[in-house]
Length: 235
Image (cartoon, rainbow, N blue to C red):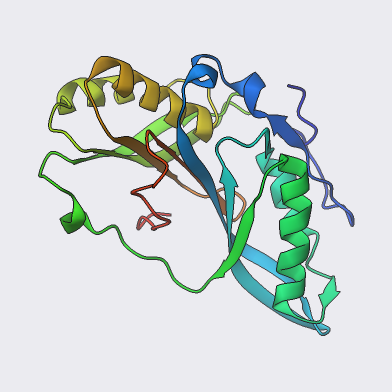
């Protein structure tokens, strides 16, 4: 992968373009594994002109994990920021435009909705006490900029067979791992799935935002996802 924007200095262009990344190129063993999930991008600073007047909203952008392509994060930030001086007759018009544009780039059906609030995670909804593991302070390293990425990892399973200490040791060992958020979550998912006997496994990474956007991958062994788009305090 030769990134067009990531790791490079860019002034804000008037007409930013989206730079896509092949899923296949960024995956190895995960390509052969049947899984489900989403990458949820929360864009907190999307601004445009509504009939000539400034408007700022929060966007939830959901990209399927099985899409042929995803979007390079810096190009997404530059692209969304380029709308600050573009005028639309309605909020639906600009969201429809974004949805079609990003879906075309990803070769998949991307969903974009405005957000007015975020739910908290309901821990009481788990089937048993061992169903949820939370690892706070997860650290990895951006493979392009070498800057640290921070987040919290949520692991759900329908069994009590997971060994918390062993899993947390594995997560701690990734503190210098060079990988994008999606790669880190897939690596964790594969490790747990191959190490333990699990019927339903789901891994969710809640990463801190950069440039007004946080990216939160979810990978699951079942189509119906347990985790929704909630928000951690430090996000």
